[in-house]
Image 1 (cartoon, helix red, strand yellow):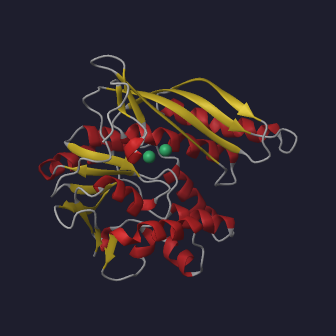
Image 2 (image 1 turned 135 degrees about the horizontal axis):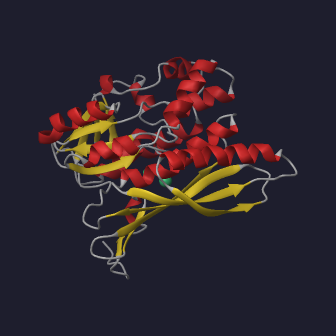
Length: 312
Ligand code: CO
Ligand code: CO
């Protein structure tokens, strides 16, 4: 491990953490992250909501409280009607308001391809940062959103989804990980991250590194019911294959059924993935019920084999 040149950098660019953390005082550190992407759904307002929920997610994954936001916009008023941009930004603003975050400004660039996202700053106690590593053997692995958004988003592009299915997908992607973070912080959580582009397997690998292993309960993985049929019909995002090529050497799977697809599916605005102390599971379940957080127990961390994801 390289010693940081600035001792106030608590989390820097190494280690694939969700956000950077910088100590301001003994009791306050700022947490910073930026995320933006091209539209994934046709409705501009919903796209804005999803982009904001996704950008905020890295702050929640670190156990921090988001405070301020800056808009990042690529848009060509010559190519698209300005009302589209207004709707995107309105979606983003509504979401950050829901999060209790203030918009301080932003920047836009004339670009033929629409892109939108936000830079978010949050705060956390320097000693209370939740990193992606630190899980211990017997920790319970909990996920707070269903998998399959990559496959369903591919289905949208192929006009394969009903309006009901699209709405359900949008609702999940636009859901803030705020409640999940609140529940996570109410118990002993040793590590956490959010599931995004590298899929469940990729983000799990960042959690275990070569320090520890994890057993995934294949039958307990939550996913959108539409995902199986879509995958069978070939609506599979390229990112799923790239993730599989990259991470499959760390995965040992008993059978190569649908669970072996879904763990590699790249997620947009996915749920939190946490390593919870087993003694605190009852407290987690009670708190989750109190705030009506959906969650799934999808596995547990194991001492051996280190660096491996066992799917079975
Ligand atoms: Co993240
Ligand atoms: Co991110």
